Amino acid sequence: MLKIKELASFCLAKPEKLINEDAFFVPFIHKNGSIVFAVADGVGSYEGANNASKIAIECLSNELENNDLQNDEYSIKNVFDAIKLKISELADNHSQLSKAATTLSIVAVTNNKIEIAHIGDSRIYYKDANNKLKQLTQDHTKYQELLDSREFSLKRLREHKARLSRVLTQAITKDHNLKYDFYTINLNDIPKHNDCIFLYAMTDGAYNFWEKRPKFSDKTMSSPVSYVSSLKKRIEKIGAEDDYTLIALSISV
Image (tube, rainbow, N blue to C red; front, side, top):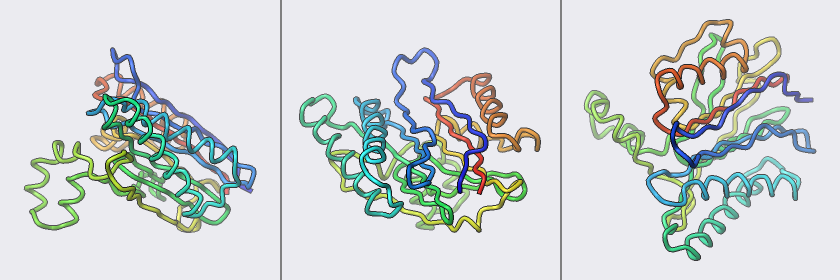
């Protein structure tokens, strides 16, 4: 039986910003025993970003409350379809919100696997045997798209990485067909630390600060609470450049 051993999180707006365009679904133990959590990041270049991310989390919550989540693509598909429908209705009823869009990364952990449904540039990580975070999702950004295409040298791409990483190639919006990634990872492939796996979900406002210097002490890395506290301090000391969200938890398996 899965148990959440330790959990910490934050979901905060950039300083002096009135509206937080991030949203999250804190880890929830469903009645079928699975542990589900998610992060969403409204696409900030368009009005209605906060509405879109809020809709994404509300639709996930409604699905979990009203149905038995079977942890397969069809259940997740219902969530994504509901989000797209509601965002489309929002856009149709409010012309100024016609471009509202959001990313979404959902994680469902069962007794034998981890399933992730993902669209956009938020990220899911796990902690490896060497106390390092390894990314499980792939960013839907122009940078990643060009990197995968091998059309340009890595050196040339890195010169434009910051700009290209801000350009999303996939998100949930009225005007684009849904195209999300679905990952299945065997739980035995995730390293255990004292019989626990460690998982992390972050929006870009958080992981950009982590990736610049992806290291804390082993003691800090051993505790989700310590990790979250330390990264929050780092972000706020340097100065947040965007809304920032992080969920970190250890799960006894």
